[in-house]
Amino acid sequence: MTANILDGKSLARSIINDLSRRVSQLTFHKLTPALAVILIGDDPASALYVKNKANACDQCGIKNIIYRYNNNVSQQQIINDIYMLNDDPTIHGILVQLPLPKHIDIPHIIESISPRKDVDGFHPYNVGRLAVGSPTHLLPCTPKGVINLLKYNHISLSGANVVVIGASNIVGKPLSNMLINEGATVSICHKLTTNLSDHTRNADILISATGHAGLICSEMVKRAAVVVDVGISRNADGRIIGDVDYENVRKIASWITPVPGGVGPMTIAMLLENTVCAAERLLNISSA
Ligand SMILES: Nc1nc2c(c(=O)[nH]1)N[C@@H](CN(C=O)c1ccc(C(=O)N[C@@H](CCC(=O)O)C(=O)O)cc1)CN2
Image (cartoon, rainbow, N blue to C red; front, top):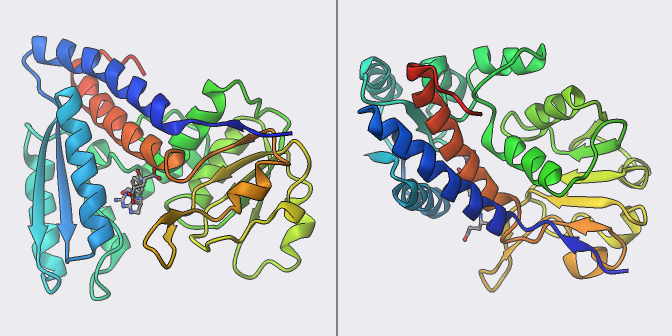
């Protein structure tokens, strides 16, 4: 058996293509969706992700402005600038690229973003709405990308045993809530989980989001499981690799995401979709 590929790169391309039409409709109504990106410090990976986000915005006509700060910028300065962006009617989405320098308190920064412009879906208001199963326009991008990738490939979530490895606020926790809302039975494993394989071997759908290269080997995967790799690390040659031992696990799984080209591009497509949704809400023409 060789797994089918969950091709996030091509799905993301087609989503971005479709978004161009929604952006044109907005610009017809004299509203150009605009995303403000706050980039603090000199982390090369963050700089690359921000550049990729800007390029993707350009592809579908979303205006994007990058606000760059030195590593030693004060927390208050960032919060003041976010307040300014909250009040700016020409800005529809605001995101702060993570991680942040140690002296900056991430929850404090995120809570200063208007929930209506929180296109990362990290604000406690949006997190809370997701947790209680209320409709929310702004879901976190990586989990939303995973769910879209699975649904697009007709992988059923209702009643499935899903194991999520990693309990971060960005991926593991919101993804688990989204999966529960889809009717899946969800187990969340994390750093302190003992006997990880006992959990993973029961998974119909196994999702790993740890950034621990090669964590998931074929012995940990049930035959014909769906395997989604959200991890990104670099090996000694600087090549990007995921949490999953792709070459061996693909011989066991029914579906698998590659790294690169799986979940990563979907994260960016979902960010763009959230930005368009945030703008559409102003005109009450949301098609999401
Ligand atoms: N404010 C946020 N910060 C971070 C988020 C986030 O969703 N919001 N997620 C990650 C980083 N991230 C987006 O910001 C991100 C990571 C990876 C990719 C991606 O397309 N990866 C490619 C490989 C790209 C490369 O490294 O060459 C792939 O997997 O194919 C997109 C976005 C942490 N911070």
